[in-house]
Every structure is written in structure tokens, then in C-alpha cells.
Image (cartoon, rainbow, N blue to C red; front, side, top):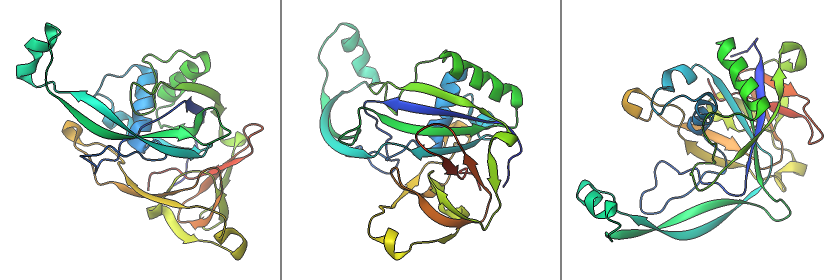
Length: 258
């Protein structure tokens, strides 16, 4: 897959995050990055799209995300209040209903970093939708508040720009690249590890949600590789894209879609 259109680039930052793993129940564990479905929700919040109304539209978009700040995990037990139909009358009168304690894993910035930071790359064939997204991000006028997985984890967006094809470099498939973004393993041709990198780079693998179907039904998840602030050296079955953005260094990314 290649793109020949503009790409909106922005950072999502916050003090903590929780991107719940879809296969956990008794404990709520977190991914170390916002999955594609979360990124769709972020763009929908910026544009003011209602819940369950945007899946088909934004599934046509292309998303990539880079972890710019290493994270650490903290397990915290939280109290959830039961909200079944028979409890609503009691709750309206501020009465007590049975609760449940659930272990919740929070993602926090590693020592030496005040906030988490995820760099998002978003492109869409509807150039008007993309332009409106970029304009709202640039002006700091998201229609709905942004958060990192939970409403208790508010986020801020820092817009870097709307990059058009002359502003970024397309690297052909099969090129040896140093990725800073999360990688869909379906796009991987070969992972390259030399002796100098094998002992110091940490590579994480996750299965994460990729898209929703009708009725908010979760479609088959994607297998993803990522690092935290390090480069993943690989050859891909698709093109990669190189961006020179700011003093944090260049980013070479692959979009998650196959």
C-alpha cells in the first residue's frame, strides 16, 4: 500500500493511560500504545462524530502511531459500582448498591519523563475530512475532550502539521528501514537484528483490535510489534514513510493497514 495524499501528524500526551486489552476480564490490562480503534475514536472526538457513527468512515483512513516516551505499569485496584437496571432507582436517590473491586493496570511515563507521548500519523482519502481534522487540531478545538483510553486519563493534542507528498519521503517496499512506529506483522518481510542491537533493544508483541464491524462487533485483531523510543530495523512488504518533524528526531513509519 502506498499513499499519495496529505498526512496529519500530532502528539497525544497525558499523565497516564489505559488502553484495555480486549481479551482480559477479571483484570483490566493495558496496551503500551493506543490501538487503531482508539486512534479512530480520537479523530472522531476531534471532528465531533457520535459514538458508533464513524466506524465505516474512519476505517477508510490510514493510521500509524509511534511511542515517543517509554512507559511503566502500575496495578491499582478500583471500585466499580454496579449499574444494572434494577439499581438505577437506588442510584438516583444516592443510595448504595453492590460494587466490585477490579485490578486496573495503568500506563505511566517512565522515570525522567513528565508525560506519556504518542505520535499519531493520520491520512484519509476524503481530503475535506482530513483538512478539517488538521484545522481543529491546529486551533486546539477538539469537538469532544480527548483522553488516553479512559475518561479519567485526559489527553492533550499537539499538532505538528499537515504534511503533503513533497514534505515527506516515501521508501519503497523491501527497503531496509529503521521504524519508530508500531508495525503490523502482516506487513513484515524480514526483521533485522544485528549483534549490537540484539542485546539492547526491547521489542514487544501484542494482539490488538484493528477495526469494528456492524453493531460495534470487533473484527479479527492484528498482531503488532513495537518498541519504546527505539528503532525497529526491518524490511517491509509495503512502503514506509520518513518524516522530519522537530528536535525529537526523524520518524520512519508504516501505516497499520495491509
